[in-house]
Image (tube, rainbow, N blue to C red; front, side, top):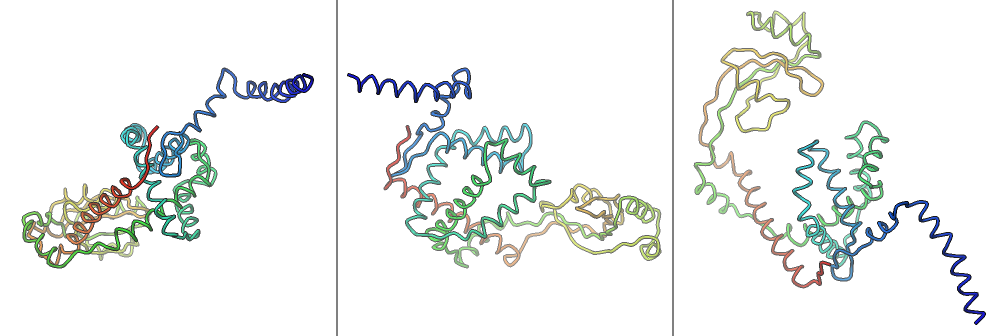
Length: 314
């Protein structure tokens, strides 16, 4: 009887301070959230996926998307991936388990290089860590996710990508069948004048427009000139397309800032649209057919992994 009383005394003395401390740290009944984070949401073979895993994955995806999307567009993008998030996490776990079976190693220098690349997108190291805190992540979390991405890429390369081939006759057949789709967009033959600052570029543009020759302006403006062609449908830096496709023959544009320089464009000639040859498009066709096969074979391989695995969504 005395031992029972002593045991009860021990439990009260030991656990009461912890209970009080938890109530101090987590007022209004918030402590149970700790357990919600540990809630199991899925089982994949011999591994579990917890609510925290799911939350961290969402935060990691949000951080990646925030470099490309902002504000309402970012919110919409995140909302669109939420319904399929658990399925993607399950698939990632299956692929990582396969990488473990294949004993695929990881060069940590690649992880460090990727972290350095991500940090460059922020003004400072402090801004980078502030963004991590906003997402509820640490640098170790990001490093682990990057490590996992490299491992998944490696095992998919070994199991799927390395087995895909596109034969020359497949490229030719696709070209002949879709020849009408391979028409070049209307093009522009241009002269591009590069200057150091906006004032110089504006003044230089004005002088060209009033009839001055570039050779007459060499001593007044330090510029370089180059010639190139652009075509409709191409991805062009700095809104070049919006400027040059509005110019008439021999017309000169105003200054256009691209990175740290200012450019003035003069339209020399309009290049009409024409049918592209097989030689011109064979690289594009090869990439398209390879990607198509890659997606089909990857889906087939992943479905096979799912069939032979134990997957339970709680």
